Every structure is written in C-alpha cells, then in structure tokens.
Image 1 (cartoon, one colour):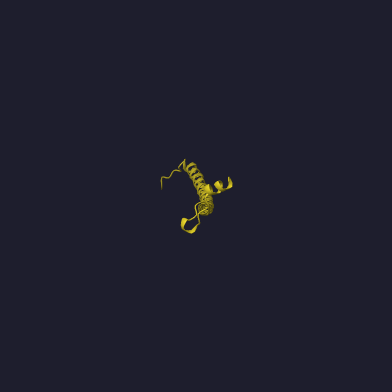
Image 2 (cartoon, one colour; image 1 turned 90 degrees about the vertical axis):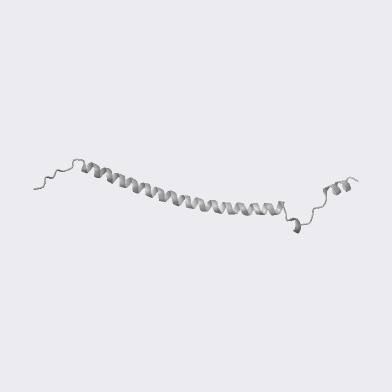
Length: 85
C-alpha cells in the first residue's frame, strides 16, 4: 500500500498559480495594446515629420533661392536715393 498524504497547501498554490497566469495574460494583452498604440503614434509622427521637412524645404526655397538660378533684387540704396530727389 502507498503511503500517500494530501498536500495541505496544494489548493492554495494552485489558486495562486491561476491568479498569476491570469495576471500574466492581462499584462501581455496590455503590452500588445501599448505596442499597437506606439506603432500608430510613430506612424503619425513620421507623417508629421515628412510634412515638416516639406515645409522647411519650401521655406528654404523661398527665403534662400539658389544663387545661380535667381536674379538679384534691385538695390534698395538706389531706390531710396532716387525717391528723395
């Protein structure tokens, strides 16, 4: 005959394990949700950065035109001298 005794802490340990498993599943689901949110935010930031780069390029083109392809603006000194006469 086997000398078997029931482990008095078995049910407590199994309940604690079940709770821990559920907590781990919840944490895993939260990490998945957070990861998806970060992916969406990253994509949005990339779009905004691309738009910002386009705007900066437009500003640079307007404020600092390429010297070889632009004509020089008329001299302000000549304009003011001729208008005072």
